[in-house]
Image (cartoon, rainbow over all chains, first blue to last red; front, side, top):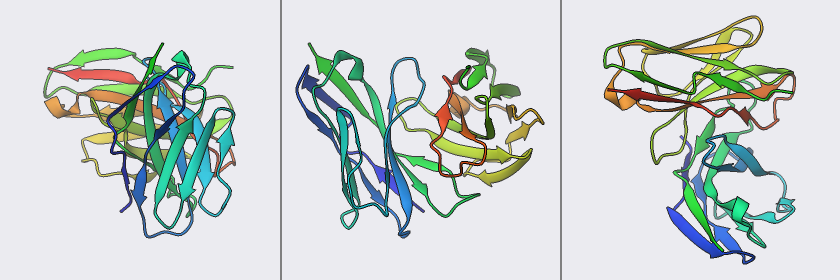
Length: 117
Length: 114
């Protein structure tokens, strides 16, 4: 079974600074997807960024980027130029690429990010 | 275009009772998944429905059951409620034909069991 570990229950960063959230995972599969989701107080899970394991290039979405280290099974999220609206719980998640019937997301326990004005 | 909608937003039930939660997927979506998120935890997969059938199930007892209707909406039923069933229940949907597309989540139903 796959597991996802987020070892930082809470992080804080000064507005406009950069912060990195850590995630490690365990799997015996070679093809899979990794995600970072953001959950603000509204409770809705919002996709921040996604990485396909077969791609060597790290994914980037505006101020959000990842450092994907497949051999180390590490998937960290870097938020640049932090904004007040970035404050939320951030969840790392894993999904197999085996296809139909294997689509469940396995989530970590989350990191609460606080932005200091 | 409405996203994934869930009802009710909150509800309170007594131990031993039964509850039904509802989800309407986003327009153009046909696959619905349910997740349970206990306080301070990440969501845990309950099951997924496609073409009105349960296609994948997580480690939840048979007290948790579901249904998907021809219009793709879905219900989650929990029988014989336990205090430990108190959680946020999230519904997520996926676009038709796009197996590798990320899920879209609703705002959840907060269930409190007393």
